[in-house]
Amino acid sequence: MKKALMLLLGAPLFFSCQNDEIEPAPEEHLHDENCQYKTEMTAPQGFTIEEKSSIEMNGSLKEIQFLNEDVAYILGSNNYGGHADVFKSEDGGKTWSDLNLQLRRSPENMFFLNKEIGFVSTNDKGKLLKTIDGGLNWTEIHYENINGMLHRIQKDHENNLYAISRISDAHSVLIKSTDEGNTWNIINESYDFGATYSTFSFKILEDKIYVSGKHGKLIVTDLDGDLLKVIETDLSDFLDVEIIDHDHIIVSHGNKTYQSADGGLNWTSLEANYKRLLDFTNKDTGLVLLNKASCPVADYPLDQDVIAFTTDGGHSWEESQEFTNLIVNYVDCFKMNDSRYFLLVEQKLYELQKEKGID
Image (cartoon, rainbow, N blue to C red; front, side, top):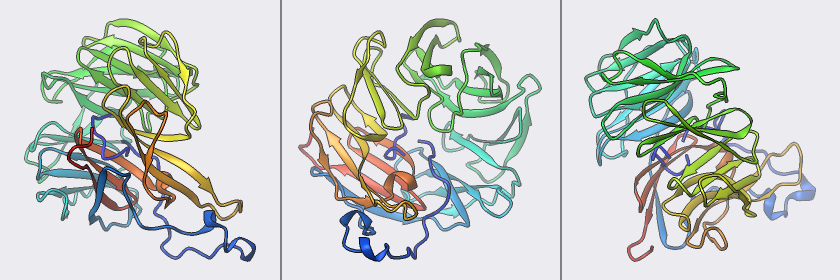
């Protein structure tokens, strides 16, 4: 997951901030447990969770990235004109400063190669904003050979950059930069590529790239973009994909989650009501967001959700207490290591940490 995981949180599945003043449930449901508004964020047994900060802005947050223990960035979309905001922390997420991009364009994604070099993509085709001084100054770069918006920049072990450029609903290309984003080359333009890329677009694992394709396919290439194989799944599209290793893969969308233990040749349905995959460190150990219940009143949209942890491949779960609309308001998850995650939920940042002695 990026392996950014601030607890599933990845890219963004939210639309607006939850109203702080929720109208009470209709009288006949006042005593229905599923219609109570639950606002205390808790952790599953074996974990602790702490609210680190609240990022105040007139809009919604989209994603977060930590560069080290101290330096982190958050991308937001301001409701005033829909322009991009980037926030920076230099104290591990306790406080945030607005970098004042003054960019009147809708933001798509953000990626920092290191503390100094970073990028913001917008709805402008073939363009990126780039900083080389940690966000103090930004330069717009126009790539004449790229005809689509750039999505989900990622890096390999040699710091080469990759992205998906969506030219149209029917056509996307995989692109690569070997010079810190100054130029990009198209390395694969398969017409099997094609998805919204709102959450999962592609993942790099070692020397392979797994790209979201049409009709629930995973297109696998090498780092030069050469096709290796096409994996068929039982989904029509992806919300989350976990590439644990080249054999063990988990894919999900809606109420459907499937896992493969043989590189995608065969798939098994998972029964739990997974809504978002946060992280699987191996085939048995994982963090997810689960939906437990919903208020039965159609015009009173309350879902009761939990953070859940498994060590046996999802057969049993340790669960947090229910938190209302956690999944709806979940933004992104960033993984610091196998024991520590940062979660963005609405405009709040939480640190989720595994207690010592927990596998």
